[in-house]
Amino acid sequence: MKSPSALSWLLLFVPSLCAAACGRSGGEDGAEPVRFTAIPDQNTTELAEKYAVVADYLSERLGVPFEYVPTADYGASVELFRNGDVQLAWFGGLTGVQARAAVPGARAIAQGRSDPEFRSYFVVDAEAGIAPSESFPIGLEGHSFTFGSPSSTSGRLMPEYWIRKETGRSPEEFFGHENHYSGSHDKTAKLVEAGTYDAGALNFLVYDRMVAEGKLDPARCVRVWTTPPYPDYNWTAHPVLDQRYGAGFVDRLQQTLVAIEDPVVLEALQRPEGLIPARNEDYQPIEEVARELGFLE
Image 1 (tube, rainbow, N blue to C red):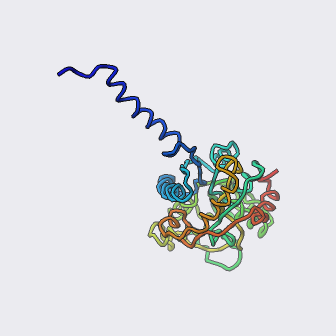
Image 2: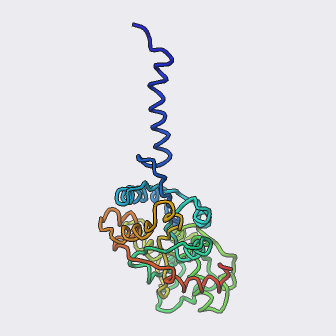
Image 3: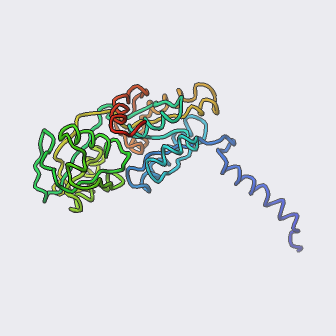
């Protein structure tokens, strides 16, 4: 039997190559994917696994492919959105304000039920000797302290706001050292638990979740104060979505997010209580604090 000719091999190979290339460029129907990201405030590998579930769900419901794009830090997520490299993002209050200021027409469209009244925890190493209190823990003065990411609403912006408001001093003046940043909420918790820092501030949901999952010992990383509430996380949509997929697509996306009831998807979104609509105006308090502290021009 003769071996297949080069032409025969080529005729067999080209369709497969074309199909693979088409698959990389979008969905099965060739549609360009909606690329979305999220601020990397927790373990990046876990986030990628969670958002793969979200991508599959939204792709099925909206009939266009969704693709998760990981980012290195908070600033990178805002820059990707500004440049149109991602068209949907799960932002914190501050990063959402920054992104919408950079992209006219961008809309906050959904938030968790807990997000309109979000909180930060101030936590301490048990050896620091600072007791829980209903009022700001002034005993933190002079102790080593870490924020989360420099651009985190719950891990830096609002904790700094309350430090300044309650002490009349900057964090550097109050703690007696330059600001330290762990990079994420879970890292802040573990650094305080280990005694690397005497204290820190982080997202209350992350702390509660880590304790519930046995990933953090509340007897070692002790919650000593809870901030007053403020608006925080949100899904923000780029205006290019309506141009690319037709007028009203962003509204459909909002409706789809708010209607999610599947507990697996809600857990992947880290909002098991469900989502509710959001508007840009909801984050006016964050914008005001950000301007006051120099995070916005």
